[in-house]
Image 1 (tube, rainbow, N blue to C red):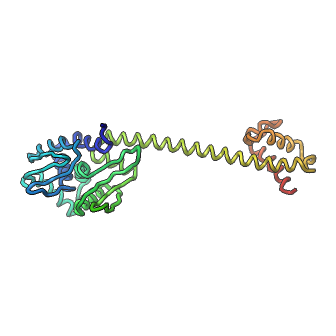
Image 2 (cartoon, helix red, strand yellow):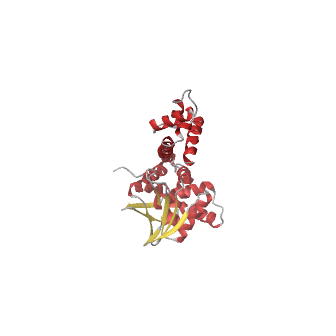
Image 3 (spheres, rainbow, N blue to C red):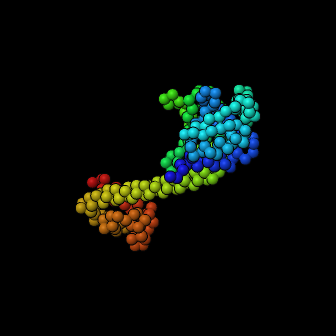
Length: 285
Protein backbone atom coordinates (compact mmCIF):
# COMPACT_ATOMS: atom_id res chain seq x y z
CA UNK A 1 0.00 0.00 0.00
CA UNK A 2 1.38 3.42 -0.99
CA UNK A 3 2.12 5.93 1.75
CA UNK A 4 -0.31 8.82 2.12
CA UNK A 5 0.79 12.37 1.30
CA UNK A 6 0.99 13.14 5.03
CA UNK A 7 3.19 10.12 5.78
CA UNK A 8 5.50 11.03 2.90
CA UNK A 9 5.97 14.48 4.45
CA UNK A 10 6.80 12.91 7.83
CA UNK A 11 9.26 10.44 6.34
CA UNK A 12 11.08 13.15 4.41
CA UNK A 13 11.37 15.47 7.40
CA UNK A 14 12.58 12.62 9.63
CA UNK A 15 15.40 11.72 7.24
CA UNK A 16 16.55 14.91 5.51
CA UNK A 17 15.79 17.67 8.02
CA UNK A 18 17.46 16.34 11.18
CA UNK A 19 21.10 15.89 10.22
CA UNK A 20 22.53 18.32 12.78
CA UNK A 21 22.23 17.56 16.52
CA UNK A 22 20.31 20.79 17.25
CA UNK A 23 17.84 20.00 14.44
CA UNK A 24 17.32 16.49 15.78
CA UNK A 25 17.00 17.60 19.39
CA UNK A 26 14.53 20.40 18.71
CA UNK A 27 12.36 18.17 16.53
CA UNK A 28 12.33 15.45 19.19
CA UNK A 29 11.36 18.10 21.74
CA UNK A 30 8.49 19.08 19.46
CA UNK A 31 7.34 15.48 19.29
CA UNK A 32 7.73 14.95 23.02
CA UNK A 33 6.28 18.23 24.26
CA UNK A 34 3.33 18.32 21.90
CA UNK A 35 1.65 15.06 22.88
CA UNK A 36 3.51 12.82 25.34
CA UNK A 37 1.72 11.07 28.20
CA UNK A 38 2.77 9.14 31.30
CA UNK A 39 2.63 5.35 31.48
CA UNK A 40 4.04 4.12 34.77
CA UNK A 41 7.62 5.39 35.04
CA UNK A 42 7.97 5.91 31.29
CA UNK A 43 6.77 8.46 28.80
CA UNK A 44 4.64 7.38 25.84
CA UNK A 45 4.50 9.14 22.49
CA UNK A 46 2.01 8.27 19.74
CA UNK A 47 3.49 8.06 16.27
CA UNK A 48 2.62 6.45 12.90
CA UNK A 49 3.96 2.89 12.66
CA UNK A 50 5.62 3.69 9.35
CA UNK A 51 7.70 6.37 11.09
CA UNK A 52 8.58 4.52 14.27
CA UNK A 53 11.88 2.98 13.18
CA UNK A 54 13.30 6.31 12.04
CA UNK A 55 12.31 8.16 15.21
CA UNK A 56 13.58 5.36 17.49
CA UNK A 57 17.02 5.85 15.93
CA UNK A 58 16.80 9.61 16.52
CA UNK A 59 16.05 9.06 20.23
CA UNK A 60 18.82 6.48 20.48
CA UNK A 61 21.23 9.06 19.03
CA UNK A 62 20.36 11.12 22.11
CA UNK A 63 21.20 8.08 24.29
CA UNK A 64 17.56 7.66 25.32
CA UNK A 65 16.16 4.14 25.60
CA UNK A 66 13.24 3.94 23.23
CA UNK A 67 10.99 1.06 22.21
CA UNK A 68 8.30 0.99 19.55
CA UNK A 69 5.06 -0.94 19.89
CA UNK A 70 1.78 -0.62 17.96
CA UNK A 71 2.15 3.02 17.00
CA UNK A 72 3.59 4.11 20.35
CA UNK A 73 7.09 4.97 21.51
CA UNK A 74 7.96 4.20 25.11
CA UNK A 75 10.78 6.43 26.41
CA UNK A 76 12.86 5.95 29.55
CA UNK A 77 15.17 8.27 31.48
CA UNK A 78 14.42 11.29 29.33
CA UNK A 79 14.60 13.67 32.30
CA UNK A 80 18.27 12.88 32.90
CA UNK A 81 19.27 13.41 29.27
CA UNK A 82 20.65 16.32 27.28
CA UNK A 83 17.39 16.24 25.33
CA UNK A 84 15.48 17.31 28.42
CA UNK A 85 17.89 20.23 28.85
CA UNK A 86 16.95 21.27 25.31
CA UNK A 87 13.26 20.86 26.20
CA UNK A 88 13.69 23.24 29.11
CA UNK A 89 15.44 25.78 26.87
CA UNK A 90 12.53 25.64 24.44
CA UNK A 91 9.94 25.91 27.21
CA UNK A 92 11.75 29.01 28.45
CA UNK A 93 11.57 30.50 24.94
CA UNK A 94 7.86 29.78 24.82
CA UNK A 95 7.28 31.24 28.30
CA UNK A 96 9.18 34.44 27.50
CA UNK A 97 7.64 34.82 24.01
CA UNK A 98 11.05 34.82 22.34
CA UNK A 99 10.81 31.62 20.29
CA UNK A 100 13.05 32.00 17.23
CA UNK A 101 11.83 31.36 13.72
CA UNK A 102 14.27 28.47 13.35
CA UNK A 103 13.26 26.83 16.62
CA UNK A 104 9.58 27.20 15.68
CA UNK A 105 10.21 25.39 12.40
CA UNK A 106 12.10 22.55 14.10
CA UNK A 107 9.57 22.27 16.92
CA UNK A 108 6.66 22.00 14.47
CA UNK A 109 8.58 19.40 12.48
CA UNK A 110 8.57 17.07 15.48
CA UNK A 111 5.05 17.98 16.55
CA UNK A 112 3.86 17.12 13.05
CA UNK A 113 5.38 13.63 13.30
CA UNK A 114 3.12 12.71 16.16
CA UNK A 115 -0.06 14.76 15.98
CA UNK A 116 0.02 16.44 12.57
CA UNK A 117 -1.75 15.69 9.31
CA UNK A 118 -1.54 17.13 5.80
CA UNK A 119 -4.28 16.28 3.31
CA UNK A 120 -3.57 15.18 -0.24
CA UNK A 121 -3.69 18.40 -2.30
CA UNK A 122 -5.59 16.56 -5.04
CA UNK A 123 -8.56 16.54 -2.65
CA UNK A 124 -8.06 19.62 -0.48
CA UNK A 125 -5.52 21.93 1.14
CA UNK A 126 -5.28 21.39 4.89
CA UNK A 127 -2.78 20.96 7.70
CA UNK A 128 -4.00 20.16 11.20
CA UNK A 129 -2.64 19.25 14.63
CA UNK A 130 -4.76 17.27 17.09
CA UNK A 131 -3.70 17.21 20.76
CA UNK A 132 -5.41 16.23 24.00
CA UNK A 133 -4.01 18.86 26.37
CA UNK A 134 -4.60 22.62 26.22
CA UNK A 135 -0.96 23.19 27.20
CA UNK A 136 0.23 21.23 24.17
CA UNK A 137 -2.10 23.17 21.90
CA UNK A 138 -0.71 26.43 23.30
CA UNK A 139 2.85 25.43 22.35
CA UNK A 140 1.84 24.62 18.77
CA UNK A 141 -0.14 27.87 18.58
CA UNK A 142 2.91 29.86 19.67
CA UNK A 143 5.12 28.13 17.09
CA UNK A 144 2.61 28.83 14.29
CA UNK A 145 2.39 32.45 15.43
CA UNK A 146 6.18 32.74 15.24
CA UNK A 147 5.99 31.74 11.56
CA UNK A 148 3.03 34.08 10.88
CA UNK A 149 0.81 31.18 9.80
CA UNK A 150 -2.88 32.03 10.23
CA UNK A 151 -4.76 29.10 11.74
CA UNK A 152 -8.09 28.26 13.33
CA UNK A 153 -8.67 26.40 16.57
CA UNK A 154 -11.58 24.26 17.72
CA UNK A 155 -12.43 21.39 20.05
CA UNK A 156 -13.27 17.96 18.67
CA UNK A 157 -14.57 15.50 21.26
CA UNK A 158 -11.91 15.72 24.01
CA UNK A 159 -9.15 17.05 21.76
CA UNK A 160 -7.92 20.44 20.58
CA UNK A 161 -7.55 20.92 16.84
CA UNK A 162 -5.42 23.61 15.19
CA UNK A 163 -5.69 23.80 11.42
CA UNK A 164 -5.23 25.98 8.35
CA UNK A 165 -6.49 25.58 4.78
CA UNK A 166 -4.93 28.44 2.86
CA UNK A 167 -2.87 27.00 0.00
CA UNK A 168 0.00 29.48 0.46
CA UNK A 169 0.21 28.70 4.19
CA UNK A 170 0.21 24.94 3.56
CA UNK A 171 2.97 25.28 0.95
CA UNK A 172 5.05 27.52 3.23
CA UNK A 173 4.56 25.12 6.12
CA UNK A 174 5.91 22.17 4.10
CA UNK A 175 8.99 24.22 3.32
CA UNK A 176 9.38 25.40 6.92
CA UNK A 177 9.45 21.88 8.37
CA UNK A 178 11.95 20.61 5.77
CA UNK A 179 9.93 18.80 3.11
CA UNK A 180 10.98 20.44 -0.19
CA UNK A 181 10.07 17.54 -2.48
CA UNK A 182 6.53 17.28 -1.05
CA UNK A 183 6.20 21.05 -1.22
CA UNK A 184 7.07 20.81 -4.92
CA UNK A 185 4.51 18.05 -5.40
CA UNK A 186 1.94 20.18 -3.60
CA UNK A 187 2.67 23.16 -5.88
CA UNK A 188 2.50 21.01 -9.01
CA UNK A 189 -0.93 19.71 -8.04
CA UNK A 190 -2.09 23.21 -7.12
CA UNK A 191 -0.90 24.60 -10.46
CA UNK A 192 -2.72 21.84 -12.35
CA UNK A 193 -5.93 22.51 -10.41
CA UNK A 194 -5.68 26.25 -11.08
CA UNK A 195 -5.15 25.68 -14.82
CA UNK A 196 -8.07 23.25 -14.92
CA UNK A 197 -10.25 25.72 -13.02
CA UNK A 198 -9.30 28.53 -15.42
CA UNK A 199 -10.14 26.38 -18.46
CA UNK A 200 -13.46 25.42 -16.90
CA UNK A 201 -14.31 29.07 -16.21
CA UNK A 202 -13.40 30.03 -19.77
CA UNK A 203 -15.49 27.18 -21.22
CA UNK A 204 -18.42 28.20 -19.05
CA UNK A 205 -17.95 31.81 -20.10
CA UNK A 206 -17.87 30.84 -23.79
CA UNK A 207 -20.97 28.70 -23.33
CA UNK A 208 -22.69 31.60 -21.60
CA UNK A 209 -21.74 34.01 -24.38
CA UNK A 210 -22.99 31.56 -27.01
CA UNK A 211 -26.30 31.16 -25.17
CA UNK A 212 -26.75 34.92 -24.78
CA UNK A 213 -25.86 35.41 -28.45
CA UNK A 214 -28.46 32.85 -29.50
CA UNK A 215 -31.12 34.40 -27.26
CA UNK A 216 -30.37 37.86 -28.68
CA UNK A 217 -30.62 36.50 -32.24
CA UNK A 218 -34.01 34.91 -31.52
CA UNK A 219 -35.29 38.17 -30.07
CA UNK A 220 -34.03 40.16 -33.06
CA UNK A 221 -35.56 37.71 -35.56
CA UNK A 222 -38.95 38.03 -33.84
CA UNK A 223 -38.80 41.81 -34.13
CA UNK A 224 -37.48 41.72 -37.70
CA UNK A 225 -40.27 39.33 -38.73
CA UNK A 226 -42.76 41.73 -37.17
CA UNK A 227 -41.36 44.59 -39.26
CA UNK A 228 -41.13 42.58 -42.48
CA UNK A 229 -44.79 41.50 -42.13
CA UNK A 230 -45.92 45.07 -41.65
CA UNK A 231 -46.33 47.99 -43.99
CA UNK A 232 -42.99 49.39 -42.83
CA UNK A 233 -40.94 46.80 -44.74
CA UNK A 234 -41.15 48.74 -47.99
CA UNK A 235 -39.96 51.86 -46.22
CA UNK A 236 -36.71 50.28 -45.00
CA UNK A 237 -33.55 51.33 -46.78
CA UNK A 238 -31.80 48.71 -48.95
CA UNK A 239 -29.07 48.39 -46.31
CA UNK A 240 -31.61 47.62 -43.57
CA UNK A 241 -33.49 45.12 -45.77
CA UNK A 242 -30.17 43.40 -46.55
CA UNK A 243 -29.38 43.23 -42.83
CA UNK A 244 -32.84 41.89 -41.99
CA UNK A 245 -32.58 39.19 -44.66
CA UNK A 246 -29.12 38.07 -43.48
CA UNK A 247 -30.27 37.80 -39.87
CA UNK A 248 -33.36 35.78 -40.75
CA UNK A 249 -31.44 33.41 -43.03
CA UNK A 250 -28.52 32.97 -40.62
CA UNK A 251 -29.91 33.06 -37.06
CA UNK A 252 -26.83 31.29 -35.64
CA UNK A 253 -24.35 33.85 -37.01
CA UNK A 254 -22.63 36.42 -34.82
CA UNK A 255 -22.84 40.14 -35.51
CA UNK A 256 -19.31 40.08 -36.90
CA UNK A 257 -20.21 37.22 -39.26
CA UNK A 258 -23.41 38.96 -40.36
CA UNK A 259 -21.43 42.12 -41.08
CA UNK A 260 -19.17 40.20 -43.44
CA UNK A 261 -22.25 39.12 -45.44
CA UNK A 262 -23.10 42.73 -46.30
CA UNK A 263 -22.16 44.28 -49.63
CA UNK A 264 -19.82 45.89 -49.00
CA UNK A 265 -18.85 44.13 -45.69
CA UNK A 266 -19.20 46.15 -42.53
CA UNK A 267 -17.92 45.76 -39.01
CA UNK A 268 -19.63 44.38 -35.93
CA UNK A 269 -20.69 47.80 -34.64
CA UNK A 270 -22.10 48.75 -38.06
CA UNK A 271 -24.14 45.56 -38.20
CA UNK A 272 -25.43 46.14 -34.68
CA UNK A 273 -26.47 49.67 -35.67
CA UNK A 274 -28.50 48.38 -38.65
CA UNK A 275 -30.26 45.70 -36.60
CA UNK A 276 -30.96 48.21 -33.81
CA UNK A 277 -32.62 50.49 -36.32
CA UNK A 278 -34.89 47.64 -37.48
CA UNK A 279 -35.84 46.68 -33.90
CA UNK A 280 -36.54 50.35 -33.22
CA UNK A 281 -39.04 50.32 -36.05
CA UNK A 282 -40.59 47.17 -34.57
CA UNK A 283 -40.99 48.75 -31.15
CA UNK A 284 -42.97 51.60 -32.74
CA UNK A 285 -45.50 49.28 -34.34
